[in-house]
Image 1 (cartoon, one colour):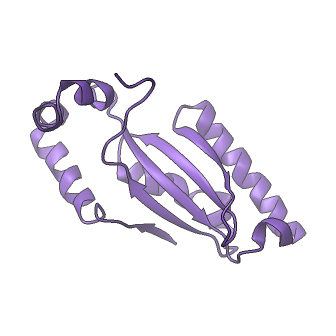
Image 2 (cartoon, one colour; image 1 turned 45 degrees about the vertical axis):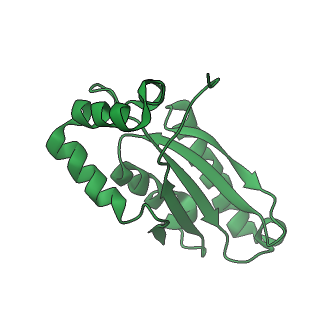
Length: 151
């Protein structure tokens, strides 16, 4: 199951439609107007390779999953790791790993992609989802991002 949640979930389709109808350059120009030039220079999608970031939280089927995996679940999670490493090498995955949470560990992925559709396509193909072991994704589009050192 893949869920786009948060206050921006209803905004994603409208934003995608705006990008498509206005063109990426117009959207980037509007972003510069709204948020300032420094912001737009850091995340401005270029016409050649638009970039959006997505925060993805992979939720396990049970709180103790990390320590109580069956041999089959462990194999699937190894496939999951290999799958996402290949996307890291291709530049689509910025970072991923397990998060220590008192309620139970979960996995974090930050994706750098051209669209929300691409994010959904990648997580649907994740072996942890395809093999139906009870994992679910919570995907949130990041509204503002900055890479590297901020001025």
